[in-house]
Length: 120
Image (cartoon, rainbow, N blue to C red):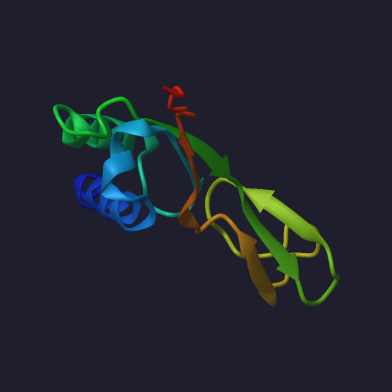
């Protein structure tokens, strides 16, 4: 289950991006995951939740946006989407294609609770 290692890497990314004193304020971790990235979203979410339990990040939840696999044909210029990861053009059948999306795995943004200190 490499999703556990991915969840650990995501937590490390949060630790690098957010000062330690605000880790407890992280509420949402938004990811983009391509359908051909080899990641099982439910397993990634489960792993993340398990790893942050009992830590300053325990209030954080993960939102995953699935990105479809899209290829652009260098021969006819059409783009096509498929769920199988076949990189042949869906329009003309050419294998002369370029992958446009569907392999990404990235943290897009972090949402923190807006905590305002009261003036004394």
